[in-house]
Length: 113
Length: 109
Image 1 (tube, rainbow over the protein chains, first blue to last red):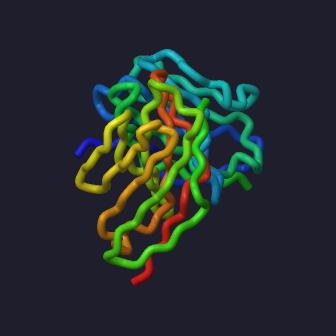
Image 2: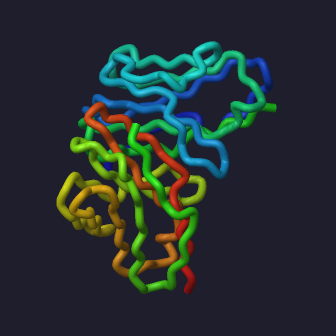
Image 3: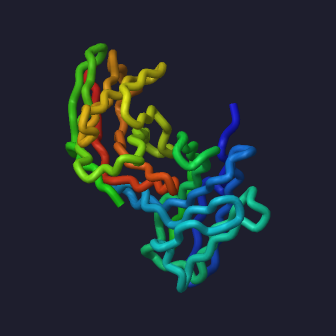
């Protein structure tokens, strides 16, 4: 069964360092999402891509976060510099069409120390 | 973005049906109603979605009110593995998928 792949699964980084997460969506899925989930809360949408274009990044803290999906396939989310408050689970999801089901990866658990 | 309202938590007994309610009074005519669930330390998992008619799949049933201002996710026979946080989400034509706080379902043996 096809899955959304994310790496790494766990990441510990020091405050002010740069960190990057990678996501490989299910083949053929044009829509890709990045979410941040703080423990005890629902996932918060950071950015939505349609192919290689950003559809919505209104909640992305653009002073330190960036996201790209250069060829419309896999995607990278970067944080520079990391802050203590960035400790969270970062989730990637993809869907074939805009209204059909979305499939989520297992996430990357980030701890900033 | 249209919002949904769900109870914070619900309890169920194993092997009994569970009805998880969701209110979405500001839903627009083109919004789809999606349900996802999230087990501890895992990413959310798709459960079911619908537009106007009731829907059934192997995991659950979705009952949508005639005016579409509310919906109910039905688990026909709860198992211990169904203990999770269940999210009701309105997905617009632009594909935006916005999560709320969800309902934490606990299942007692």
